[in-house]
Length: 352
Image (cartoon, rainbow, N blue to C red; front, side):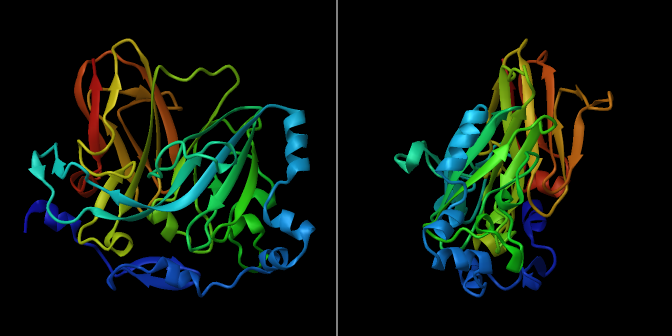
């Protein structure tokens, strides 16, 4: 067994806990849709499904009148997002450029992903992919997110950082669940999230429905950024999600430690910048592990004023860093947890 084979072995039988039940990681690929069939439709959702026009509008989230009121009160940004299955290749080149080695075995599986569309879901803006599309707002704006579920399991969109009312949480809460926390197949729910003062920063969104965390582990997450008043985006800006695709989710033999849905340099995002540019990294993690972001040949100042070149973060943590580029070359960025690093959590940062 080589080093990669040793590191890729799954450790421990407990994969996660779902609705109070222990999900084992040594019993083959988890059937998320099969598990979802055992989840009862929450009372508020069932009542909305069975009712007339009034309850039907509640099941769909924010209505025309409410949307018009927000539009009249200030600037808004609107997104149309679906959740859908996608055939995903974790290592599309079939190689690890860091070690200059081929990746043996299968690397494709059916992921779940968010996808952006033109208004009213008329036309996709691109393929469904992991992570989902960037959601962006300035302080003072309201995000209106029209979400349609094209998966068999009920899923949602739940944001971090931004302000929202209880009904717009997107979280499953058992018998107390609002319709936005249990969006069934082919249903649409409109979320309203407000970028109030004090919400600026690097955040993320993800599924928080009744099957959480399994849909997240299958790819249902993405970045959210809220910019402060007058803030200008850096000239080179990157959004990086650190996560894992593991055998109980993929049905594949190996664990893959990923950045933005891919594993190993040459497959993870190639990042490009030029000397003299202001560069910004937005980094977040969304799996069961702690990670350590490290960028070779560079350093930055953390919020406490300390100069660092490595940042440790946990599940659903997010942060940003900025610096003015002064060091040309082909550099690594990677997780410095060594088994994550050598299971694919690395990539190229190329400075001209």
